[in-house]
Amino acid sequence: MLEAHSPPPILKTACSNCSVVELCLPLGLTGAEVERLDTLIVQRYKVKKGAALYRTGDPLRSLYAVRIGSFKTSVVSVDGREQVTGFHIPGEMLGLDAISIDQHACTAYALEDSEVCPIHFAQLEKLAQSLPSLQHNLNKLLSREIVRDHSMLMLMGNMNSDERLAAFLLNLSQRLSSRGYSSKEFVLKMRREEIGSYLGLRLETICRGIAHLRDQGLVEITARDVRIHNMDGLKQMVSGCNRQSH
Amino acid sequence: MLEAHSPPPILKTACSNCSVVELCLPLGLTGAEVERLDTLIVQRYKVKKGAALYRTGDPLRSLYAVRIGSFKTSVVSVDGREQVTGFHIPGEMLGLDAISIDQHACTAYALEDSEVCPIHFAQLEKLAQSLPSLQHNLNKLLSREIVRDHSMLMLMGNMNSDERLAAFLLNLSQRLSSRGYSSKEFVLKMRREEIGSYLGLRLETICRGIAHLRDQGLVEITARDVRIHNMDGLKQMVSGCNRQSH
DNA sequence: GGGGAGACTTGATGCATATCAAGCGTGGCG
DNA sequence: CGCCACGCTTGATATGCATCAAGTCTCCCC
Image (cartoon, rainbow over all chains, first blue to last red):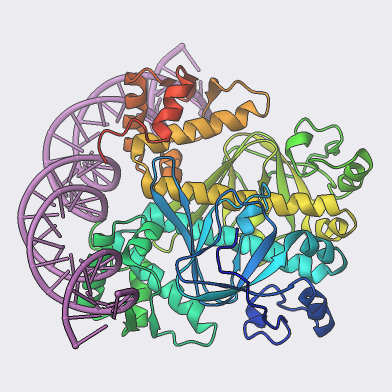
């Protein structure tokens, strides 16, 4: 299942001293509770850029919290088309869709050299029985993913290409910002084609969208470096106020 | 929150003798466990056709299991466009997206006169602590919704209009079939416009899709009555084998 | 540091679906 | 039972994005 490399590197594991503890599963747990959660994480894994953390059909052993780096998750249709279902940055959980049938429903690829905290799921469920707030966090995590997916459906069903791109950039900006990174300058770790798949567009359309946003003075994107010049302008675009046609 | 009517009718509540018990939250629970779950459902609600069971922003009090009838859930964008996020038939759960922030993230409308079992969420979480299999079921329910949404993203991102319509009909057919209804003959409870919103298409495109499927001898749809003539043909269409263009 | 493959950009063209429009069917209510 | 509003169907046209194509950039590996 894990293609990282062998032997897997052993790392000091502890949610207690993790930089993303306040965004991750332990959210709102007491110190003593976090320590019990720590016992589930035997050791962290490193995943090389391009490698798969798990693949569609793999049995669910663990959920994975991204600690460092970033991932994309994608499914492949019968006729071989890839659909990217999400991008994941530190503090976000991977593998939630596997709980439904105890098998992973998508494949998770590292977009750069990354590091995850595997959380053995059976043990997590067991621990959650005695830690109500842990259970509550897991429920919220799952529910939040549903809400996120619904807003993606709204995006796919009702937005034009420029609006989708703006929404994507804003979303990424917000998530990075809440992790202490700049909301206005960041680096895209994924290719244009992957952004396109995520947004239901072709890579050429992403390029043109980037050019449009540039021409409007909203953002500047050179290669993978993003600089947002007009955050409010972007937000207006997403709320559909700027619609000329459609 | 509840627009049903007053006074709300009091109905005999018991998962134990509900016809959809084997598709609903109690799945896999023992008789004694189901009886404890029964205690959470104080009384069932009836919801009139067109009425809202809950609305976006309502505080989360209960999840709702559909017992009789059907619902659509939808969100409205800033500029007033509706996006239907799902259709729900007996045995399916409503309100899962509210767990994330203790507020409903969408509005649920009854597509016909319907009946739901409200399950008080705080009590459900509490009960789940002492019933591991109940907790596991809830986790699975949430995860299944995520998987379902991901397949909708695939549909929106990679399928043409006829394929989307075929996928929609097949999905409905399967869900009705697993509830003991005919998989080949059923009635659509929603308007063309609602199907279109759900599939990211306009109502006219749904009409044309229906005509295309009819011309190929796959299904016959008169008004809202569906008769599937060639189930395998439909499935082939969804897997993308019939693609001429695209 | 140089070569090459993969990623990105931009232009020209075509097509699938949206939009606009007009008429028909139907079911719900008085 | 009949009327009317709403839902459905089908046609004509417009348009936004996909597709095809060609060239540039960049970064990774030797």
